[in-house]
Length: 332
Image (cartoon, rainbow, N blue to C red; front, side, top):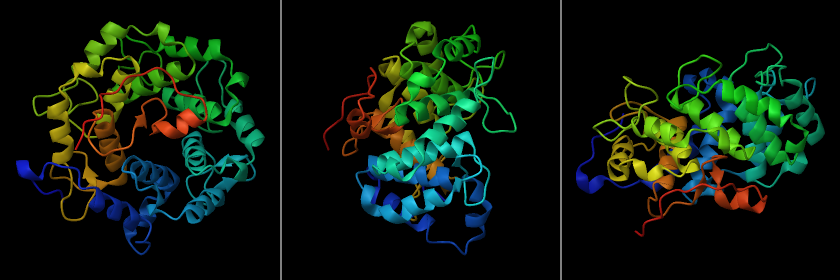
């Protein structure tokens, strides 16, 4: 469990977190390893991206990672599942693409088939389904837009129909929900705002109202919640900050208090970051804690693109960077 640090210990323990992430793929005899098979490819993306932000990309063996990703290929559908022999899904397909782009290995996959899979899930309403079973969610719309952009096939998307659906998910408070009529939620705000950023349609966002709603997610202890009257959670350090960075309102958050909250959720013995101090760590919260710190300008970290949740250098190399503003990187 996370230890309670003194003020002198409030610094990011990068070597511990690197070791923790490396250990996750080595403990194949643990029950938890097998119980999380449905998240495996997502977890590799979370861990790899966290390592990139901490400037330790090489801590995971490149060929081993790529080999696992390709073992998750669903030949029948033409996309990726979360684990070998799992059905293809939009979430795991985006993670696979992000991993391969990070390792400059897109040539390993059948891009036309993946593009066909993604576009096949575009519903008449404008939203995307996650897979052939038909569940829809604005998360899947973001995954589709992100993936098509990374693959260089965004021009094949019906942008107007996609944007129209996202606009219909906008609420009076400026936020967005998982579907039309659903309450605003910080994670859904991120996926909608980031998708609109990729599509160059941020003009449909009520920036002032949304900025106010997002800044109201900060609680007295410095942490952020996902919606009113809920507990703080480290993962919202990314969801909220990324949306604020995209609409260039990140200064509306008390950065020092949020930084202290994220750092207090570290496990100072075994590494990793939890959802809040005292809870068990996991790779999901480790990534989004580190990602939040990067956007806050924490010293020594690599710049993270809040739109794609990937290192800025990778996004810039592909000519995909959009306008956004994080806090200036502080010196150590």
